[in-house]
Image (cartoon, rainbow, N blue to C red; front, side):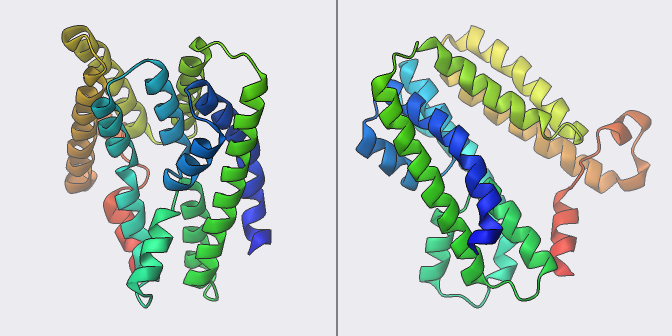
Amino acid sequence: MLKIALPLCLSYIPIGLACGILLNVAGFNVILTGLVSILVFSGGAQFLLASMLTANAPMHTVLIMLFFLELRYALLGSSISQYLRNTSKKFLYIFAVSLNDENYAVNYLKFATDKSWTPKDALMVEHYSLIFWTFANIVGSLIGNLLSVDLAIVDYALTALFIYMIVMQVANKLTIVVSFVAAVFAIISMVVLKSTMGLVVSTLLASFVGFVTEDYLVKRGKKRGFLLKKIKPKASRSVISKSGDN
């Protein structure tokens, strides 16, 4: 299992070190960094946490933002659940708390292409990635104790992270459209509300627009106009469910 998970685990080291350093800047000591790495196994969430805490955002705003950022795991979990039907509730709980985007991609591909791949194999991939991520975070926190980091770099690091996530999905034109809509909503809501709650509002509005647009595109099928054909989702909910039925 380590052989399958190793490329993923090695990729966690540089970004995990950066995340640990930023968490240290945000006020997390080594122990807290280790705990948040295990309990919030999500690079995006941890970067967001570091950024919002250094910006002195209210705790309720931080929690709401984290909730909606991590809500995608409900969809990821539901799509992979078909391969975990004969497992216990205890196993499902352990599997769920160590699920993230990257190990989901590895496991879903293995489940879909390798009939010998078992839920226990998938769980080992999750745990290997969790160990490497947590270790990299802790080392990053230790490095952060030795460095003097300007707080402004946290904002740039988070922005760079999410720009990278958007660029990786550039083939999905719907994602680009929703990202642009989210940016517009964020500017407007931040100006109107004059607080970080504007980010929460813009996130909800952009998510709603994306959901309604995708739902419309799926229902229209081939009857979409020229412009809508250009922004069709690369992999809609119906495509995902059909692939799971095969």
